Length: 142
Image (tube, rainbow, N blue to C red; front, side):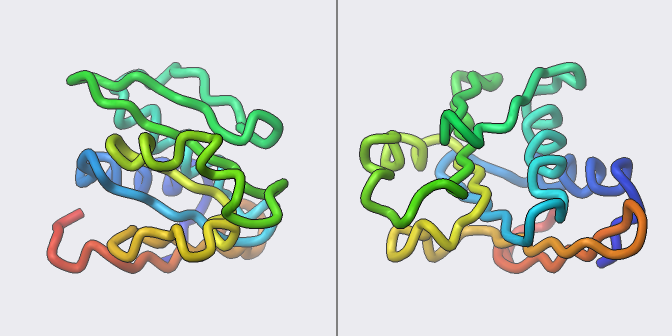
């Protein structure tokens, strides 16, 4: 699908947030500037019900945790700076999968990538537009 600007990216994020459940992983891939952080921010704001939720990029912290309604936790990972999956255990990967794990640069997960994850591949187009290819969650309406 083509997302024409930030509003459409946030609308997709909100649809995904409505369908997400504890134990889900959402893997966001694409080059720098493709909109991974914008989609993650929209997802976390929709999931929390707080349109003003501050969602900093976890580029340097590698993971940012969010307490969500109902006692659930959402973990936002940015694995750009990782060479591979070895450091994920120290970052609380197993615990993150008890809530919702949102992962930018999921290729760094290696064999730790959950087989049932939702995958969103983003590619920049002209202007603010981007292409999104969404796969997974075939039996779930989103």
